[in-house]
Image 1 (spheres, chains in turn green, blue, brown, cyan):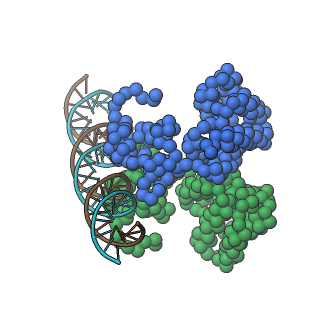
Image 2 (cartoon, chains in turn cyan, red, orange, purple; image 1 turned 90 degrees about the vertical axis):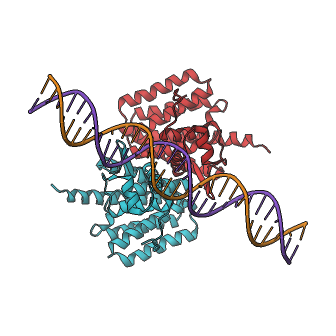
Image 3 (cartoon, chains in turn green, purple, brown, cyan; image 1 turned 90 degrees about the horizontal axis):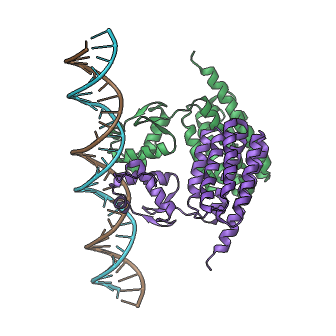
Length: 218
Length: 218
DNA sequence: GGAGCCAATAATGTCGACACTCGCTACATC
DNA sequence: GATGTAGCGAGTGTCGACATTATTGGCTCC
C-alpha cells in the first residue's frame, strides 16, 4: 500500500519489500531466502537484493544456515531474552522522556492515548497505533542511540507473529497502562515512568506467554 | 595481524578490513569513503566493498552525506547519549550476570582482573584487556540480544579515538572498579553489580570528559 | 563582477555473466 | 546391500561494464 507506481523498485525499496514480505508472512521464520527468487519476484537484479539481505542479516532478522540465509526465528528463550532487553531500554526511554520531552511531545502522547480509546474494538488499528505510541515515546527520550537500539528490538519483534493486543480484553488494559506512562512523564517523574513501562511490558509479556501456551498444537 | 596469506580478501574480510582501517585512523570521522578507492586498496572489486559498507552503515559507523558515505563522528551530545545507553545496558548485563553466570565464568572474570594487575603500566595492553573483560562480562549475562546490542555500542565507541584508560592514573583505579563488579557478581548481588558498573562507567566518562577538555586545540 | 546555466566528470546504482563451492544423485565396486 | 565416488546442478561470491545522477568547474550573459 506504499507506492502505487509500477516503476521498478530501487535499492532502498528492496529492503522494505523483503521486510514487508516477512511481515505479511510470505516468508516465515525458518524459510530459506534465495537471491534469484527474490530478484525475480521484485523485478530487480540480485545486486540490490543482496544488499538488502546484508542489512537484514546485520539486524539479525535473517540468519545463516550454512551458506544460505533463512528468516530468523525466536524460540522461547530468545523471546524472554528479548523482553528483558526491551524492558530495560524502553524503561530508560521513559525515564529520559520524563526529563527531556518537550511539553508538545507529551501532548502528542496524551492525544494518542485519547484517540486510542475510540478504537478499542479494532485490534488491527490498535496494533498500528500502539507501535506509533511506543515510537513516539522512544523519540521523546531525545537520545538517538536509544532510539536506534529500540528500532532494532522492534524489528526483531516483527518475527513474533502475533501482537499481544489482539488478545481479548488486552486493549483497554493496555490503554490504561499507556495512560499511566504518559501521566508519569507529564509529571516529570522519571522513576515512576520507568516503573510504569516496566509494568506495561511485563503485562504484555504475560499476555503473550499465556496466549502462546494456549495456541500449542499438541 | 590477522591473516598472513596474501590471497585476495574475501567478502567477509572486506568488512573487517575497512573497520580496521577506521580503527587505525586511515579513515577518520568525517572522511569520505569512495568505493572504487577502497576496492583498489584491498584488491577486490566494488561488490564486496559495497556490501561491507552497507553493513557498516547499518551499524551507524558510517553515515550518508548526500549520496556518499562518510565515517560517522560523535559530537559531545552524541557521546553523552551513547554513555547513557551503554551504562544502562552494561548495568543490565552485570545484573543478569549476577543471576546467570556460571562459577567458571566468574572465575574467568576474576582471573582477568588479577592478570591486569601485572600490566598497569602498559596502557595499550590494558586497553585490549579491558575490552576483553567487558566482553566477558556481557557474555556472562547469557542474553544474546544484550550481547548484540552491546556489540553495537562498542563498535560506535570505536569512533572515539582515545580510551579513558590511557589517562594517567586511571588504570589502577579502573582495576579496583572491575574488582568491585566481579565481587558483586560473585556474591550474586545483582543490585550491587549494577551499581558497581554504573559507578565504573560514570568514572570512565568523567575521565574522558576531563581529558577531552584538556585536549582542545584553541 | 556576479549569477546562472551547461557540460564534463566522478561516483554511485544496477545489471548480466562467470567462477566457485557444496550438496545431491546415480552409478559402480566390494 | 552398503559404501565410496564421480558428475551434476543449484546457489552464492565476485567481477567488469553500463546507466544514472550529483557535483564541480568554466563559460556566458546580464
